[in-house]
Length: 397
Image 1 (cartoon, rainbow, N blue to C red):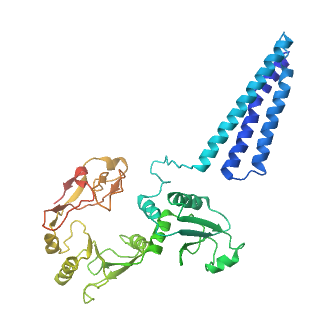
Image 2: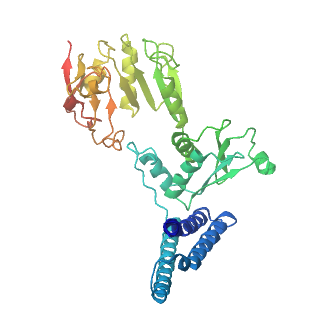
Image 3: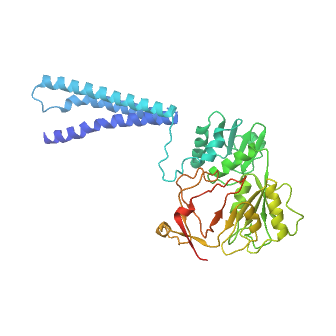
């Protein structure tokens, strides 16, 4: 009798194996969209287990004195179990159908690493015409596919992608000029653009978004980095701007060095001049050329280190700007909590400027920042990009 009771306890709980297997089959079928052979086999197995369990259940209830009552209760319990099982399966199936037809992604990571950047969302949402991404690779990188899915969710009407096995479709691969596995191409109308020539590393959002901008861009902006006064080099190395230059080129900018001492003036095709960390004073003629360039609507980016005099006082004064030669010191002490020194202020609040408008509450670092004073000037609008003053104090002379 004791042995029968133990077997009954094991048998009683084995009932739930059937619904679990059946639900697994339903879930696999709805998610993958393929019902044979595995999902269908799981569903049939689960139903068979439920049926066998109900058929054998009455034979294990030998402890009940009233055989008639036992049979009645056994039948009632079996019916209730069957109804409950069918109800659970129907509910789970309905939830899966709704989820498949109305997919929703929730990014619970702290830095929102699975959420597209605001700039990317704007670009994809406002595509001017259908765009397709062709991935020529016999295997599907799951990270690349996940990224492309997030793009397609933002604009399913105009954004699409397809993985192609070059060995199975050699004609299409030859049409795109594919040479290596892992190549990725963009196609918009009659225009085609290569994103990546080789390699099977996952596609990144920066690369894809920049390529989309390029394929729809009808203009090329020219940026010149001023050279000749100890400015930061454009090549890789200590203090080099190689990474910044590569990023600009990815965004369809043309980047070139400019030495005004060897040129007749600022080129007419220049859109922006960058003066990055000069260690010596600029010549008067160079300063005047920059003043004229600004007066004619050009853009100027100045990155000036503390304890240096670039000789730009006349230019800056005209725009209501005065440089302070001291260094901004972290007044909050939060930098020390993450291993940073006092000369690296951490900022969490930003001004209403296009550069920082989408920063949110993300932090940014400003090592060896140089304070800037401003005064109102007619016709000129001042827009700070951060609230550095709230987090710093001034040190040095």
